[in-house]
Length: 236
Image (cartoon, rainbow, N blue to C red; front, side):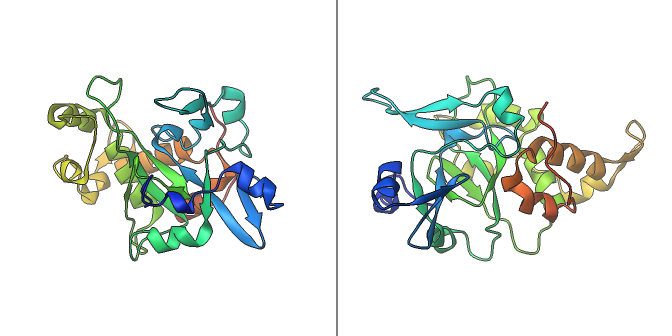
């Protein structure tokens, strides 16, 4: 969505809002009636977890922006959200999002990885926010329901696909040309009835993916898109 250097002029840190008398509400700022959304970086999320870590600036010259891992107690609070390094005007999200795609939430995966990591491809649902180039967005057409997104998210995070990614990756990035080479199940594959589960695979996968993902109120639009209108699921 936004390049870390090419779009740097759009980024605003906390000092900007304090100097402008900005008002912070949850994880966004408002200045002169303009809303600023957090900028998500790859280090801030993990598989099925959009609240994996916040970001702080340290005296590390090579890598000043370091993750602040979220605690279990913070995860258990559906109101809690990790703090980003910078924020971006809300209008820039629509201006830089894929055409004809949903913008009230995003399906994304980390661009930077390594075949030596515990898991190679890390995908999650992110709330409406600005997203930097260490994160790749998969455009979700307006007509695609949340259940279908859950199936794709689960496919991306599966052990079987992760094994294939390890065979293909040659550096530290998962680019879209590599993503297109990965095994994705056709949606009809999930219509199969499982004797072991005593239900269709789709029902089982969607329920699991939704419960893992919807642990904070900021992803309510995603839960509603999946046909669920209840509170966030308890983090366990």
